[in-house]
Length: 393
Image 1 (tube, one colour):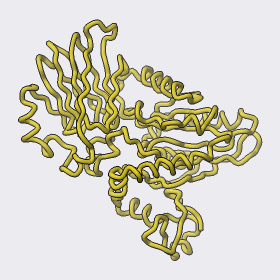
Image 2 (cartoon, rainbow, N blue to C red):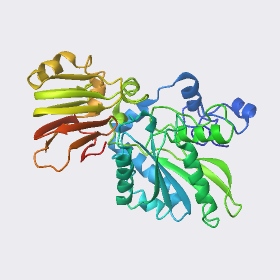
Image 3 (tube, one colour):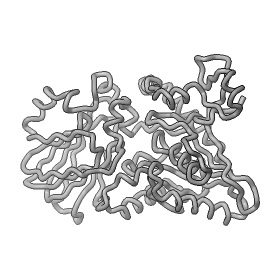
Image 4 (tube, rainbow, N blue to C red):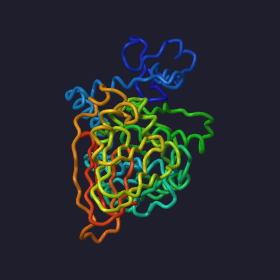
């Protein structure tokens, strides 16, 4: 039997409880253009399957097996001549790279697509972000040829990416035939391919299944994109996402994802802080500042509540506003899934040659700091990667 056109899983009609189930009547009616029952529910009923992910997060053996399965699928890339499109989230450039990817793609050319660029404020130093992304890729031993800031949803820079793909396929003596789109879960790989199909293949609706939930794509999905310089058929191939255990969104409920996922142009929230003050980003992040005066700018979802208070009032605020103002998390179950909190302390601005520093919070965005001789303490769930760098944005 064929594969689901939405997620790539092998279809079967024998057992409704197993992945890939589709009624026999659907295959008779639609032939090979069939969605599995899971994809059908996601597309038409906004089906929530997040409990499957939560079960894995609570089970180290399942996580290990999931990781093993993912890398087994990447084995197909070893020794193959291909173009690799690595997609990351422009608001999460540090945790978005796949561990050991170089061992599978070898010296194949890699083009990095930093998605969701349409949400970035115009005053952002995008050149710094592009350079940093390229540096991270090169440090990971990837043969990075280009970095594009794109929006898969709003079609930003898509034409330039497609021209780059055509260029590679026409200038490698017919060696390159396949273009693999790889990346962590929920970075927009399937949305990107759907956009290409709408622009270049005349699709009037999404073909691949898209969801904010993790692991929507189950297996490889091959799409014919014409021929290369040698006249060989070329394929654009969507791949399952690698689960990102350093990104806070992996542990959040569907309700919380609606708040933290950046959907629209970011309205930067600026704060002038004096003495000892604290900022809460929902109930996920606490930032304690010790400084005579400093400026803080939050590049995060417009829907994520930011609460400012004196540091002396923190305990009272946490006690009275937990799961209400300070959300997500929405409940104890979600709080437990996030894990214990850890605190990182940074002493900045005294003898630094840098005018500003930026804190990258994996899954949320950036906090931009400007001041002299200050201390900042960042308290986050231990599952979240926190990276602090000078003058990124």
